Amino acid sequence: MKIKGVVKKLLGDGLVVAEGEKWSKVRKLANHAFYAENLKDMVPAMIASVEAMLEKWRLYEGKEIDVFQEFRFLTSEVISRTAFGSSYLEGKDIFEMLTKLGFIVGRNAEKIRLPGIEKIFRSKDDIESDKIEQSLRNSILAIIKKREDKVMTGETDNFGSDFLGSLLKVRHDSVKKNRISVDDVIDECKVFYIAGHETTSSLLSWTSLLLAINTDWQEKARKEVLELFGKENPTSEGLARLKTVTMVINEALRLYSPVPSLVRRAKGKVNLGKYEFPKNIELHIPQLALHRNPEIWGEDAHLFKPERFAEGVAKATKNNPMAYLPFGSGPRTCVGLNFATNEVKIALLMILQRYKFTLSPNYVHFPLVVLTVCPQHGVQIMLEPVGV
Image (cartoon, rainbow, N blue to C red; front, side, top):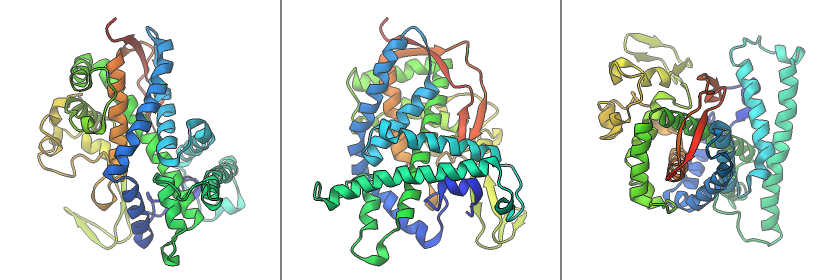
C-alpha cells in the first residue's frame, strides 16, 4: 500500500505498509518476537501493569471512572514494558507524540491534495507534523542508543529478547545483506507502538461498555474467571481455558472492530463476482459492514450476543472466513493478535475478580475513527467492589 503525507510520517515504511522483500524480512522478525514462548514470558509484565492500574482504581470505588483513558495508560505501559523494556514514564512522550500525529492524520484523511502542492504551500498541520516526526524520531533513537550502549560497553552481552532486541539483533547481524537500517528500526517501533496501543485500548473500552450494559454476561464471565482462578493472578495456560470471556471478546470485536477497514492493492487485473478491477487499484474492505451484515449474522446482527461464538468462530460464520476479519486475513493477518488478546483477557479477568460495574448516566455514545474506532467522549462506568 502506497502512503504519503502525514500518514507516512506516522507509519514510515513499517510492517503495516511495507511490501515485497522488505515486508517478508520484517514480518519474519515480528513473527519471532511473538512466538508462543516469548508471549508466555510477557504475561508477568502484563499482570504487573494491570495491578498498577487497579491499585489506582481503589480511589474510585463507588464512583465514576473513564476506563478509556485508563486503558490508554495501561496499554502504553504494557507495550513499554514488554516490547521496549522501559516503563510508561519513559515512553510517555512517544505516546503523546503519536497521539498528536494520529489526530492530524484524522483531520487530513479526506482532504484532496494536488501533487507537489505541499512543497509550495505548507499548512499548519504540515509544519506541526514535521516537528512531531523529528521529535518522535529523536525519542525512539534515544531508546535504541541506550540499548546499544549497554552492549557496546559490555554491561550486557545481548540486545534482549523483546521486540526492540529482535530488531537490533538484525541491525547488527554479522551478514551485511541481512541487516536493517536504523530508519527501519524506528519505523517498526512506531508501528508497534500504534498497533499495540490504539487497537487494544479501544477493544478494552468497547468490551467494558458492552459488559457494563449487559450485566448478565458480565456475571457469566465473572463466574468463569472465579472458577478458574479464584482471586489468584492468571497464568498463560489458564488464559487458553477461558471460554465465556473469549466469546465476549469475539463479539466485542465483531460489533466494534478497532480497525474499520482493510486496504488491499490489486497486483494485476482481478475479477470479484461481476466486477472487474484493473491493476494497482486499491480496494477498501469494510469490516464493520461485514460484521453487522444481517445476511451473515441474522436480523439481530446489531445486538450483543456472545453466544454466537459458543462453538467457535468457524461455526459462527458458517465457515465463511471472510465474514469475520477483526485481525485481517491471509499472510498479512495482524502479527500481534495473540499479544493483544492475551492482554485484553488479563485486564478483563483481573477487573472482573475485583469489580462489578455499570454504565454511568454521563456516558455519551459517539464512536469516532481516529486511527481506530474509539469512543470520542470516553467510556464512563460506575465501580463497585465484588463482595460488597
